[in-house]
Length: 394
Image (cartoon, rainbow, N blue to C red):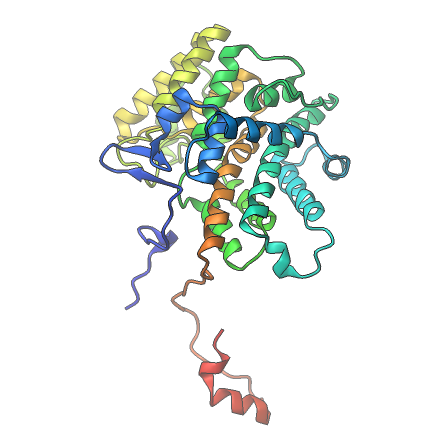
């Protein structure tokens, strides 16, 4: 009997040098560095460089990356026009997916040979940087247009995190907010062969272009069992209302066998190693905005859920309320995830292209046995093919 691994659970499909979870320390490593150390000491730009190149940049390399990123921040007119064609009621992830498709079409325009569109390693590194640079404008404009506000042009005197917040809110953010946002981007940047990353690698394995692979990853990330979980956490907080309501709310939710988003992770069994760093960032925001009610609700739900179920929070649990305090709309949370994870996706896409094998798993068929249409008589070519089934397999 075929051993089925539903969801590919426990299946090792390839090698990667981009990231891993170290079971001995329960740490998520980017190119060997614990992510909590990177979040505490590095800018998001430096971490992006690390994911793409394998090492942290020196001062000159970081300055060069920053110059390139800042030169490509502006939202192109045709990308903006494509976003404007969508109803403001569309989910922001649909805006991001559409924008990346347009950006990709612009970048590969005039390339008639699909093999040439795949790009060289150098070309795809350049494409990765340009796409990463443009996504903050896409996400920020999406939130602003839903609020009836105008586009805010980027500034080249601000780093990535500060400029992202500037383009979203039209004012410079306080340093504590910039720092918390920078840390969140680093924590979301990469996480091995998760659903969206694997989707990107599957598409890349067909020798499709980098943008198509990223579009596919965005579609996977939209799902509430993956990137959409941070949105769901805020919906839970809103539904509960305050710390005093947690016990009764949790009684009802567990009795109804509801899935409580923001808790549990397929990889981490002793708690998500990214949570303490993001929780510390959330605490700084709670103090900055004087919102002890948020901390009380967070702590009450976490303690009671862990006590009853023994399941610990994942990164989405502290990031949801953190983004809410910063002023982001709940629907914008998952696009923020995209803006961070595009660095990890593109690192994996380039890694897949460097040592490619078409990803094409098998399945165990459980349908009807072979059967035939009454009165059908195959022609000679069909009979000939049936006698050579090994040539018909694909």
